[in-house]
Amino acid sequence: MKKEYDFSKGKRGPVMRQRGKTRITIHIDDDVLEVFRERADAAGRGYQTMINEALREHLGRSAESVSADTIRRIVREELRKTG
Image (tube, rainbow, N blue to C red; front, side, top):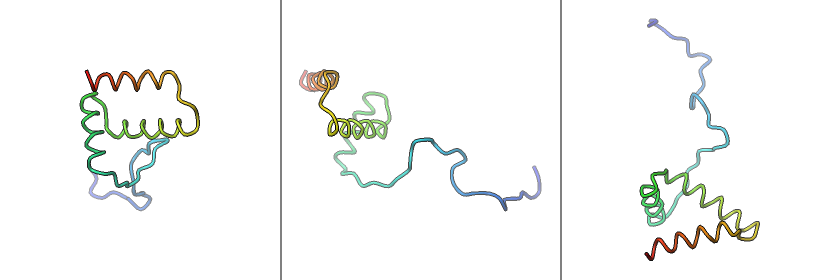
């Protein structure tokens, strides 16, 4: 190890930026967040990924009609809830 290091050209922030992602602060109702966390734990996935997918799905629905794949997925999810 050196006695001193030159940080004069150093920059604050992450060493490597994630491409295509932006860190933000958002306020989400506690009950909504808890549901996403529970579902993410059950699926073995990250809750932030699930929130991102839900937002993408919502944006897709508002711009296009609902696809057959989306209807099948929703029916499967609802059947799992009741069965």
